[in-house]
Image (cartoon, rainbow, N blue to C red; front, side):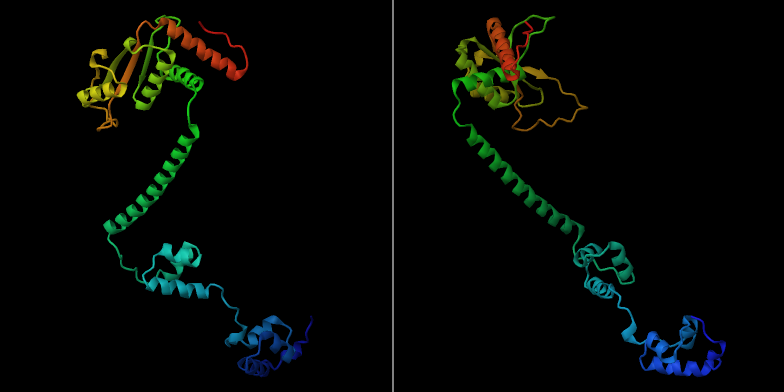
Length: 290
């Protein structure tokens, strides 16, 4: 909007009126309308040096957060605690309170570590309880095994963990090796189901030479209920000083090998049973490798 040059000739007079209105609490918009000053540059010059009234100041949204952050810092709160409490960024917290003294550590490092350890142990306990509940529920789902279920289980068990014939080395031996007592028990039950006499079974312990060999031999003999005369000489694994062993302690008993004497015919049947399972699972006729 064009204005007449003579309109602002009495600039000082206009300024006195503008300052007076400003001190009465007028906003720039009201001063403009009152004095008919529609040039913003001149309007700003007329009130230059006069602070705006409080009611015209735009409130700063973070002022309350800043005040609260400073209050919490003076109470000894950490940056992380203030950030979580107020829901603001760490950079804002740092900007607001960095001039304040750093709070003294309320706990020693050892105390803080002990508290953290107790919290972690509590979480582990909860996880372990959940783990055990899941295992117990799964155990109940199995119930009683039929002879056919045990038979199928034993075939798969042997083919996963037992010794197998090779085209370039026809041995057809039935040898099962495992360190899990449960696996040995199931395998024994399977052999009983097949009618394999215990007199045809021979055992041997395989264990690290630094372990308690005698205790391991006694343990396996008790587990399978066999006389020591059914055991071959224990195989000892030489200790490598460069290796850090984790299978140590009272629970380490090595592995037990269970051999069926005169087992060639049994081996052939096991292999045939296995490929029968494979074929049935895929509903196709798979060529037997033998």
